[in-house]
Length: 295
Image (tube, rainbow, N blue to C red; front, side, top):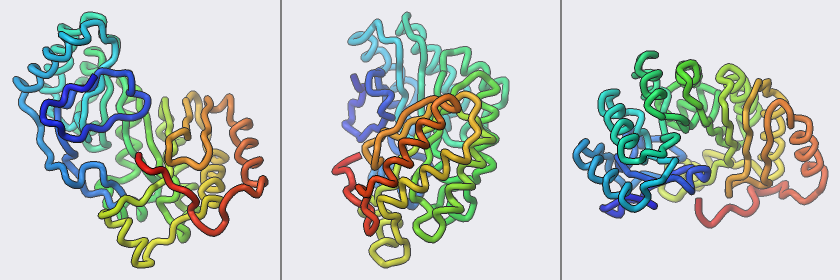
């Protein structure tokens, strides 16, 4: 169920498909990333606590036994600590069987909370923070107007996980284009090795009409990776990873080939599958190949 009385677009990760979705905010407070079209036409608004509590009460009447809640939208972690704690406390009262609350976050919104505050939020059943690293390469992040550095995002993930929270980190295959694919892959793996996220998702960058990235491609300023090169880039990242205990997924609709496993346990199997695919002759070596109709 989705509590969204204004019919604003609400986004959630695929893993949250079965969670109760409560839209405490609309849009994204940053909303400037060159590759992202999710919130382009949605002005950011952080709803007042009274409105949020009304949404929670309404949803609890329909799904009183819910165990998982996802708070939308783009960076709910950016709310002040006191507001976020109040929302979590209200959820615990209204959903007596609640086990966890998950949401999108950014490095800056995590770093804005003290270690004590992060620990208190975790104690109030905040569980997984979804964060887009996108790339570990600083020039690529600057070009894509990410608005924060890889170093700051790594620090944020380390802080969050030290407080008991789980970080689900997303990276974008192909974000460096043809010119910077190798640098993107190696820098991304290096930052992930520092983060040691509990969950890691690899998605392929998909040009969205109206975004700066889409215009750069049309103007010949950014050359997309071929289907073969995207898979090779993913293999390079996986080969450089030194994870201690991470669930890895590359099964988003944007990906060329679905992969899933636990690192380091399944690292060899994943690399073998990619090697088999790269040697199969089935991949497009001249274009990005088919893209999903929707994300």
